[in-house]
Image (tube, rainbow, N blue to C red):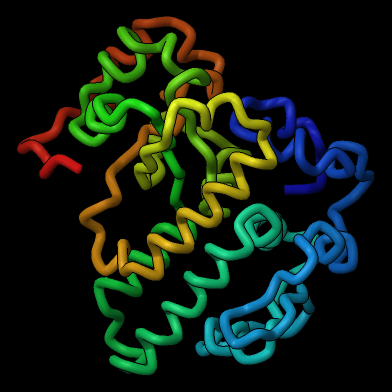
Length: 263
């Protein structure tokens, strides 16, 4: 897909439009230098190497390559790699921790076959969405697939007691050509009520720290904590979901065959 900025008008990309204002004014894909300017000062890998986006060809040892050198292979004029770079800008600690965990797992178990931990880390890196709530029952509604409660009956809680923040760069890429069935992986985060009074930068800074600590604590040793999130159902992220009957599609908003263990 060629460069365009109209994607920033969609609710899914509201955070990017707010935090990277130059993105909406760009006549073409940001180059590597511009992407580097968006990184927080001092962004580094767990090995202490400054993170920089470069045109290096990725190898089978991509994660080890990043950890050792700080050089993140980034294709220019490429949506997937653009969104990965923005994820590094938004979540520098968490991205560094995730990278370090990949390498630690490879060192312990080898490159092949992939372990459950590496599969979980990759799945979250590509498809993860942080769902942040000050009410545990809102998170449980989503985890237990109580879609009518989460998205219809309690719709007024969105933006006040619950919100979604995209982590996975593939989520942003897939959102460019949305389709009914588009699904992410939810990572639940319980917060105090005053979180929702903070500005967007403070929220991201807090979530980055919380996520990095959770990853360090092996929260993604398997996929148990992750659950499906029908992306187009999140209020504000897709215009059609303003109609309550949008959620009547049980092929998209599927029930759960058996309850998940509570958080």
